[in-house]
Image (tube, helix red, strand yellow):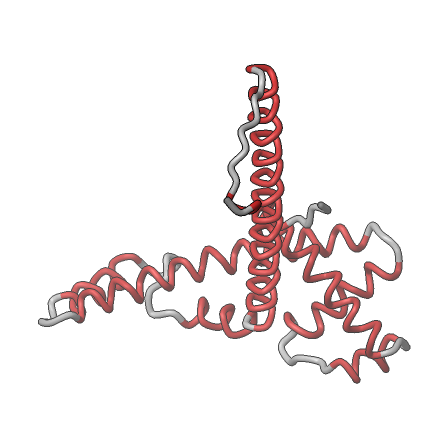
Length: 194
């Protein structure tokens, strides 16, 4: 029999076996907990990134969405009877038009609700910034000029207007987006350090 083919038996006590099992279980649990923590942090980061992305989309499309609400065929502010008549006429058409009309109606309602929420949170942000330092006041003015006024103002124009670098303007936008993300999406929009 060759040395490497030789089988050896080792006798272990019950306590030694239990200790090995406990150590292996602890090591496995530790690795599992670490893996779950990494997955949770990754998920939270992706969620925060998605919220910031959605905040940027809301800001970039603010003017268009606001205009859409004011020009929508279906609007809760319009006289219900005339809106109902228009909707009924469209719904009586054959085919899948009814589904399309319902989708348009629901989209107009959702857009109106979202814009009303965004308007309120922008006002909260304005009040917050007005009570802070000059930097925060500028951040609000930058966001307002870029996204909320009738005509958008470019970064170079804002840089000249406020007497700061373009990098500062981009930093202002980033800081405002993070604060607005928290306002738009509540506690879920906050960045928690991990």
